[in-house]
Picture (cartoon, rainbow over the protein chains, first blue to last red):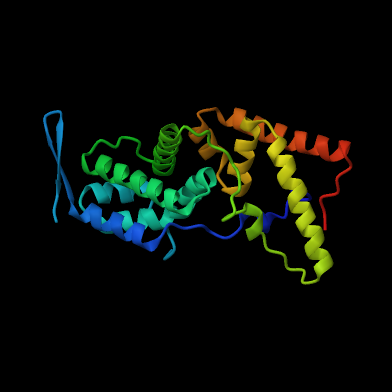
Length: 47
Length: 194
């Protein structure tokens, strides 16, 4: 395969999600609290 | 020793115990593979961001509710969640997933070419076009494995876990993909070199 494919080119540049998306997830994680009561999960999202 | 990476399993454990920084490390470590995988299926930045976000919301909820039980296999687990969300997306839109390029993106447009002269650029462009056409002609299962291995740089273990087949089957599909490509190249005497 190495003779056919330009290896470096195939890997290409890294495609990353938007910074805002990552920031949202980190904030969401900090705000979320999940409490389990028996079989029920209660999600509490701090504002 | 300073570069020793904390294992995913330990980061997950720390996160479940309340260490929010562990999630930051996990996201930073795997965002490229996960987002690359999603984008390769959707070819749309905005939708890919949505799916990436939904994937990690699910991850966060599962971890925070102590429902995660796949210690040591964090990345394949997240990839499976992303894969399922992609399928849900296509089901909602009643479209079949395809590795098709759009006006916004072509995987070949990001290929680098160190040779500056126009002739080399033209040849490279032709090679890329030929290769793209050849890959498109492969059976879907072989194309999927080839794309995951070559374009997303996933290991065969990861591929087998994401596609639900054994490592041997994934290896076999890769082998047949290469054999089929070579057959077509030989048959039509295509030259894929600069």
